Length: 250
Image (cartoon, rainbow, N blue to C red):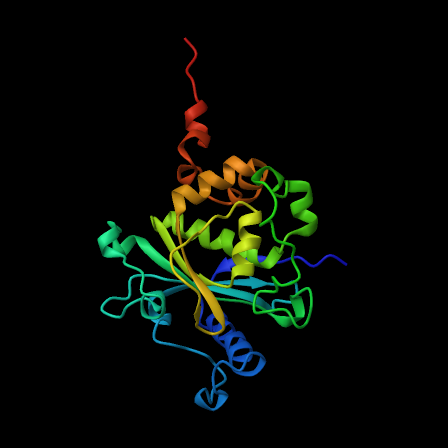
């Protein structure tokens, strides 16, 4: 039986509580990154959540099975990646109100390909590191082989980023996740060395404009038929917008 998922921006207290509970289960019990005694209500909440946009993957039983958040400008508190990886933001000409850090990406253990996979279930997915770009998955293979929950969360996050006029993403992620994302044309650039932050992660940086152009170039079917689905046309790449093809009869 095929399982279907919904991907949405979290906009209710009840759903947000489910997000925090999944984080508690994974970070406190499965991975033992955090002490469960510090979270008596079984909700993992930190100082960045008030500044974050949360997204959830919901299965057909209305269970939260995947989560991710975008941490926006939280000044005077630095972003987590600034604390642990020390990238230079302001001196690179970036506008702080237009950047966000991708954080707390988790897939429920019930929906990882193997029960012992990491937080995102990427360990059992083949990477594209030894293949040329032209061999990235096409749409027909994507439907069959995709890490559906992770890509669905990225799609929801991409839509909201466009609506909020964000320009750049930062992320500290495992190399395997980077490799799998890159296989689908979601390209991030490494900006530092590996650090131990809830496990070994590498700091990455991505321009949203560069990222969407790259997905379109290497995998136009995936970009046009999946990532643009549900996004208002005025947020599309300019050369793809319907108004670019309008004409007047004389």
